[in-house]
Amino acid sequence: MFLFGFLFADSLIYLYSLIWGCIEGWVSSWLDGQREKGVTGLEVKKKSHKYFVYESRTYWDKALHKKRKTSKYLGRLDREHGLVPSGEVNARITVLEYGNAVLAFHALEDLVPLLRGAFPDVWEELVALGIVRMTGMVPLKSVQHEWALLHDNGLTPSLDPRSLSRVLRRVGLDRAAQDTVFKGIGTGRELVYDLSCVYSKSEGVLFAEKGYNKDRCRLPQLNMALFCNVADGMPSMIRVLPGSVRDIKSLYTTLEEIGLEGKILILDRGFFSEGLATHLGEKKIGYLLPAKRNSKLYQEEIPLKAHFKYHDRLILAGHKELEHYHLYLFEDQDMMLEERKHLYELVDKSKLTMEEALGDSKTAGRILILSNQDRSEKEVYELYKKRDGVEKLFNYYKNMLDADRMYLQDDPSVFGHVFTAFVSLYGYCKLQGMLRKAELGHKYTPHDLLTIFKKVHEVTLNDKTITTEIPKNIEELQTKLKYHIHPQKMQS
Image 1 (cartoon, rainbow, N blue to C red):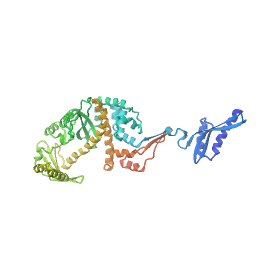
Image 2 (cartoon, rainbow, N blue to C red):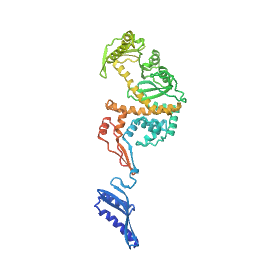
Image 3 (cartoon, helix red, strand yellow):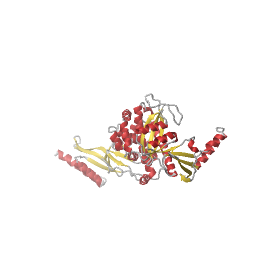
Image 4 (cartoon, rainbow, N blue to C red):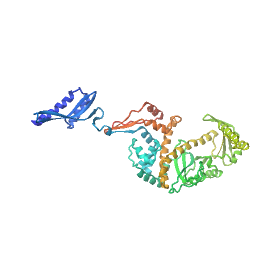
C-alpha cells in the first residue's frame, strides 16, 4: 500500500507536467519516451516559451505526518537535441572549421590513394599535414593544434611534433615510395622544368653546399628541381639536388633518373646551351630553350613577319629553320619601350655608357627561343609563357619549407619535408585549377577560397553533429566552381 502511494504520486507529477503551462505535443512525446525507458519522476516546467526539466520525488515527512515533494533541476529541454544537462552545455559543444577542411581534402583526393599505397603506415599524417599547410604556413610544432580546429575528414593521424618528425624522416628515407607517388601522378606531353634553392646552415645536411644562386648568396644551399604539367598546371615531381650542382648539370642528373622520351621540356635561360639542345635531341626529348641575351644566335637575321596579341600586348614574331633546330624570335613592343627607357636612365646616372646602351637596346624586349619543334610562333610563345606560373608556385613552395627550417637537421629530414611540401603544393594547384576553369583566377587565390569556405562550421552538441547553414555567397561560388559541400545530417 505504501509503494502504491509513491507510484500514484509519480503519476500525478507526470500528469501535472502535461497540464501545467499547456506544454506542446513534442514535450509530451519526450516524456512518454522517458517513461517507456523506465525513467520516472520527471517534471517539465514552461518559462518564457522555454522548457526546463526537473526530477521530482515525494517522501513521507514523519515530523509533519504528511507527504512532501522535492525537486532537482536537471537541465533545459530542446526540441532537436533533447535534454541539455545543466552545467554541461559549454563543455559539450565543439565548433570545427568544416568548409575549408573538406575543400582541402577534395583537392587532395586524387593523391590520397597514391599516398595510401606508397606509405600505408603514415599516409594519414601526410594528408593531414598537407591539408593544414594548405590553410596556412604552419610550423611543424603548431600542426597538431591547427588540425584540432578542423573537421578531420575521418582521419586519425598522430601529429605531435616528435612523432611527426619521425614520420617525415621515415618518408625522406624511402625514395622508392616517393617515386611510386610521382609515377602515379604521371606527366603530360609538355613539361615546365625549373630549379630553385633553399638555404640551410645545419651541419647534418650534407646536400647543403655553396653554389650559384640568383641572390648571389654564398650560404650553403639545397637545389630543388620541379616538374609541372603544362596542360593542367599540376606539379608532377620534385627532386632535391646538392647545392653545388649548376642548372644544366642538374637537368642532366634528373634526365638520368626519369624517362622523358617523347616529352617536351620548357626551360629557362639559365639552362641555355647548344650542347644541351643537342643532348635533348639525341634523347628524343622536345624542348623550348630561350637563349641568353649575349648569345651569338641573336645575330641571326630573322624577319618579324608575324604578329599577335598576348594579354593585350603586341608581339612581333619571326621563325627561322636551321640545320638541327628552329629559331623563334619575339619582340614585345611594350617591354621593348620599358627596357630602352631604363637603359637611358642608367646612362643619365652614369651607370652605363651610351655605347653600351645602344648595344643592349638591340635586344630590348626580345626573346629568342631555340627549339626542335616546328610550330606556329604564337603557339611557341604561349607555351614558353607557361613558365611564369611555375615561378610563382616555387615561391609558395619555398614559404612552406621555410616554416620547417629548424627541423631540417639531416638529409632524410630534408627529403621528407620537401616531399610533404609537394603534397600541399599539389592541393594548392588543384584549387588553382578549379578557379581557372571557373574563370575566377583573376579574382581569387586558393588561399582566398579556403578562407571563404572557412565560414561553414561543424557543430557538435551532446554527441550530435550538424553543419551550419551555407551562406549565399558560398552557394554562388560553389555553383561557379561546380563543386558543392555536402552538409552533414544530424549524427548521434
